[in-house]
Amino acid sequence: MDRVQLSPDLELSRLVYGLWRIGDDADTSPKHVEAKVEACLAQGITTMDNADIYGGYTAEAIFGAALKASPSLRDRIEIVTKCGIVAPAGRHSAVRGKHYDTSAEHINASVEASLRDMATDHVDLLLIHRPDPFMDPDVTGPALDALVTSGKVRAVGVSNFRPHDFSLLQSSMESPLVTNQIEISLLVADAFTNGDLAYLQERAIAPMAWSPLAGGSLFKPENRSLLAILERIGTEQGVDATAVAIAWLLAHPAKILPVLGTNNLDRIGKIGDAAKVTVDRQTWFDLYTAALGKPVP
Image (cartoon, rainbow, N blue to C red; front, side, top):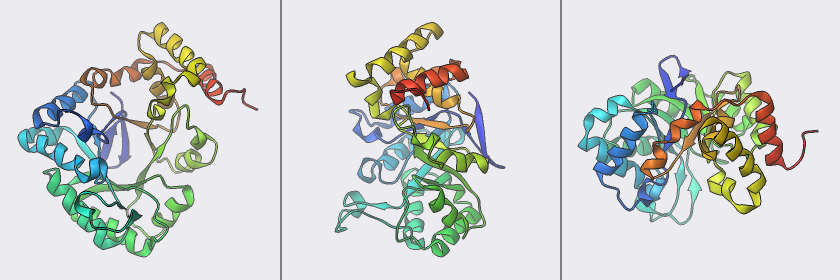
C-alpha cells in the first residue's frame, strides 16, 4: 500500500478506513472492531478516520474499547479525528441546537475527550470538522498550535473548508495545516474545477476524500450507464466496480486519500483492490464524462 507524507513526521496510508458508521453495526464488541482493523492492516491500510460526533459522540469510545482490549494495535495505526461540531446528542445533549465551536476551550475539551475515549496519549491528525462562521482565527490557530507543541496532536488540518477558510485559519498559525478532507467522488466532482483541489495542489497539500462512493449513489439505477463502465473496467482488471471508482480518485495527481467506511468484513477485505487498478488519462476522462453526462467543453 502506498503512503503519503503529510508532514515531516506524519505519513498516512493512501487508503483510509472510515469509522463514521462503526456504531451502526449490530456487533460493536472490541473483538469485532479489532477484526475490522486487522482486515485493514492485512492490506497495508493503517490510517483510521474518526470524529467526536460520529455515532452521536459514541464512535471514539467504541473504537477505544478495541484499543484497550488490544493495546498493541495503537502502535500499528494512525488515528485521525475531528472536532468542532456541537449537536444535541451524547455529551452535548443539553445544547439548544446544532452549532459549531472552534474556541480554544472547546477544541481542548474535545481533544481530551478523544484521548480518553480512544485510550491513547495522542492523536496523529486532528481536523476542524466544518468551517465555523463565528471562528476567530487568532484564537483557533494558536489553540491548534499549542496542541501540536504539547504532543497531544501530531499534526492538524481541516475538513470541508473552502480555500478562503483554509487561508484565514493558516494565517494565524505556526503549524502547517496538512490536509483538507472534502467530499469528492465521481458524482461529486466539483473540487476538480472549483479551485478546491487546485489550491491544495499549488501548496503540495494532499487532500482526503470523504464519501468517495457518493454514499452508495453510484449504484442507483439512474447511474446505470456510469456503473456499466465501472463494471467493464473492473472485469478487465479483475476487481469490482467499487475498486475502479476509488482508483479513479487515486489516479489524480493531487494524491487524494479516499476514506472508505463499511462494517462488512468481506468488503473491508477488498478495500485494497483499488490500488491494483490502472486508470490512464483516457480512462479517467471516460469515467469523468460519463459522470457528468456530457463531454467536457
